[in-house]
Image (cartoon, rainbow, N blue to C red; front, side, top):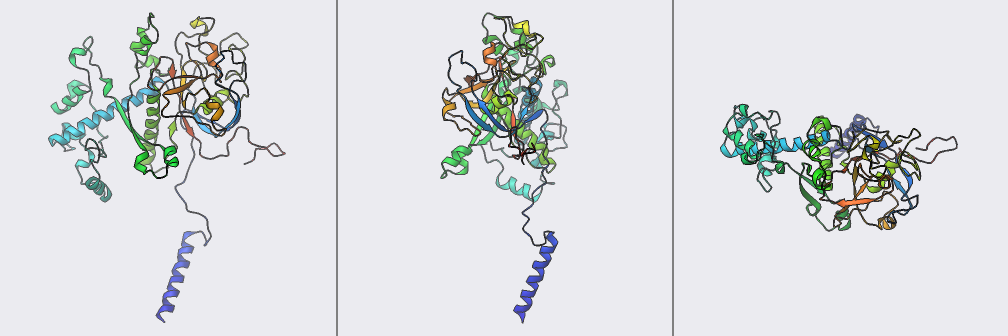
Length: 464
């Protein structure tokens, strides 16, 4: 009798559970967070599709590194312009401020000044220094995992609610002054009495997972494929001097990166490794905002592959020489279509001596500006003259960690028209920076229904 009652209760509970779920007992799948796709700010959607990659014209330079092949790429978002000085400065300032806050919090911990209500360095102490308002899980993490790293302070939360103080007259105490002094060059290295940041202290640390290695060697542990990177993020402004011997470019060295007059110009003097670090920071920055609001994370920002870059640069035009078509670098009114080195060295003939604003000239049919000219752009591919021959035809990507030669595409303000062709390839070493190389980022599109040349039905409507 007891067993019969137990079975009856179990059936009733199962019935009530099924009714309460709203699925009427049907298999409808587990529900996650609601996903509302959004176009990232400043980006445009490049619909995936197939195109003929490589030299469609005669290879006048005889490089023979870009034979034609049909390639298909998936949809992705791409920055409409090259990353500008003002955008990259936000990255630099974030790294600088985070470094200062970390130093302040560590010193506050060491000297025992951890009162958040104090007027001194204590207000910049780690947030977990006061466990009063911490959740059970936060206390558990602090007791069991805090400090598991090189410095012993990894995982500690910084106090971001208090503004940093940069005016020396307003420093709250000597401890604060001590930390800030470490961020500037020594007094004997100051110039004209101006305090100058020691930009070698602006270092960004991040982790990446080598998924390709993990997939290839299944016996590896997860920790074996998590790579730690540290990159000094400040651009090398001396490139304006070193790239051009016997040329007066001191004004560009002095002002180009930091002055607001050049805020909307493309950032230069950034190595491939720094461009990769920027992508990691941009992802981190976006995720922090979405986490606060309980939203889904987005796909990571990254450098485009070589195939993605060329596909986007063509703007849907098959076999075109330039993003605007071609074969000429002028329009029907005799105006140059990009910023490059025309007429055997008359740099100003295209209305620009060096770089121009990132949104100058007309965009291509994907609304992308300066895919040719202005600055050449880093892509996430290693240069191999024969890579087209062995790479896949579907989302091809050739990036050998052992090959320090990284591809740059699009040509720049100092290049002749040949390098502006969407099929021309060039390279620079990953740790090198130049006054004519910048970058733009991409983000994978969630889904597959958006394609540029999808099959159509008899009524001319794209199939979904």
